Length: 337
Image 1: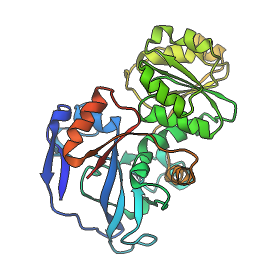
Image 2: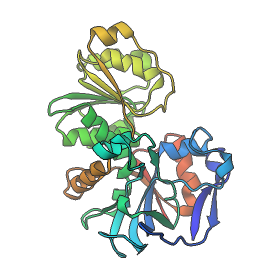
Image 3: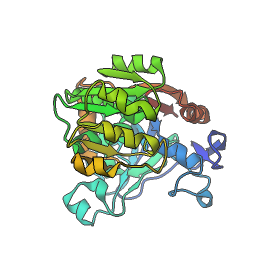
């Protein structure tokens, strides 16, 4: 089979198409024919050598957290799925023994990790992590969900977003940002979203954003948001210089949930504003398999349609990462081996 392997950690030029033996399932495992796999900023950080999870010692490395396709074969002791089933993988890897695995939520597991290997024609996976795809949902749409949409959904739930709440999403045109706008709309919340691209803001408006702001300047961010209102919630995947102004714009008692560091790993906070305003800052990583099942069900029933920014064949994986790196994409980028 063919894989899109990371052979150098130098950015998109480090992707090479290679041949590997077809995988065979062990007990408790399944092999799927991958029809679609979305790529994420997580993958790009690895490819750029900016991840603590992967270094040059493990090259060539096949990334890809979100494979979806058809079950090809199953190993011993597998129940509930069979060859021919359409499935999408929940990429969570957990120990199964700690208090969070026993009592939930599983994404708090003390040994939490993520599956890699979806950028290939076939993938060997933990069969218990497969979620069935209803007939009404295209496989490529399902592949958009496990990382970006699950992350956004979990953040909205951790912030207790309710109908009528005002949700602010800085940098809302990437995978998590677009997902947040769509899922906030599902929850009947009102949204503010920023982007430096007027064209992308038009697309966000089509997806349900209520208040688009054309700007990527953190210095003017708080004032622009306050002209619309004080957000009850901020969904922050940017970090860096965007955290402080977004926090300052937030309502008294508001909740900021942070999941990323696209704009920087260090943020400054106005500490008096934080405690005098009774504001909350919450860290969040991924979500649960139950979250993925819920999102698959909602998409299959037409509550929202995952936004796809482009599809690429396996040979064009490097091009897909280059588009992500240039921030030219809107929504999820999908590799179709």
